[in-house]
Amino acid sequence: MSCGVYQAKDYKSELKPIWCPGCGDFGVVQAIYRALTAIGRPPHEIAFVSGIGCSSRIPGYTTAYGFNSVHGRALPIAQGIKLAHPELLVLVAGGDGDGFSIGGGHLPHAIRRNLNLTYVVMDNQIYGLTKGQLSPTSPRGLKTASSVFGSLEAPVNPLMYVLGYGARFVAQGTPADMAGLASLIEEGIRYPGFAFINVQSPCITFGQPEAQLKAHKAEMKSLASLGHDSSDRIAALTLAQDYGEKLYTGLFYRDDTPGGTYEEAVVARQAELAAKAVSRERILDAFVPR
Ligand code: SF4
Image 1 (cartoon, protein in one colour):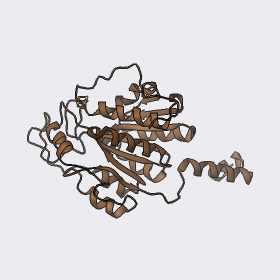
Image 2 (cartoon, protein in one colour):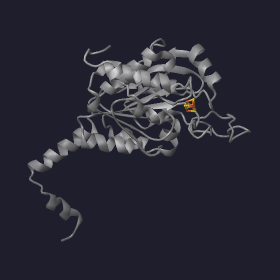
Image 3 (spheres, rainbow, N blue to C red):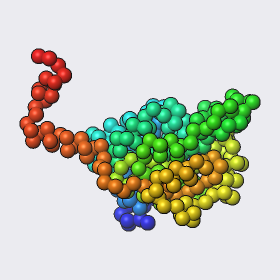
Image 4 (tube, rainbow, N blue to C red):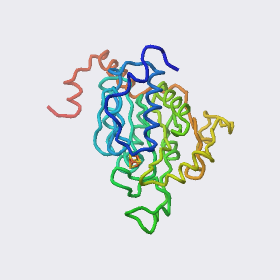
């Protein structure tokens, strides 16, 4: 739903996406335009950070401030931006390799700090930009140009991964359900804390699009239709175990207990120290003998 001030075209840059025709990421960027239209923040109040990969091109296709950064480092950069400018709406995006392999060490810490960020992972189970190597979410047995006998490894389960580390907002969508995906991204942006959205976004060129598209069309089930209670973390973990077998869409988990964000805690700590008149010199004295 649009707030009426901005339209989807206001968030769309003049850059033409160079993704392969049919790539799932086209649907994801459209869903992001819709979500931003519903939120209605002006583009100059939005910062969009990504890592490296096909999906990490996405900030360039928006009119937000964008930073197509370093492989796997989108989350630390986004957290720095949010801390320096808490008033900005900060979006983070990337692929499964960027998020769960190269950047896998950053995600638990972003989760436990709970800054108010929305992280959208385009999970295509392959490294597409580098022409089809196994990624952390590739299924066991997948054959690619660089693994002709098939993967020997079990895949990372992104949903279990983030739920296990205590993520407070966890959802999964697909561009095959554009309206549903846009609505999840909007809800993630409105959520006052770290929101994780896994998107089953097929790589048409190097992935296993037939299997993924078949799953999208035939096996997609909304969590709402299963009667899932998104306030129940254990139920969310149970359903998340089916990742790779079934495609559940919607909200796995949402924690609405008051907790506060890291940036709020930093501001409170600064005010507390200022009230005690703790000078910078006194703080330094604790660390540097004079
Ligand atoms: Fe999309 Fe795959 Fe092409 Fe990359 S290689 S643009 S992920 S279809």
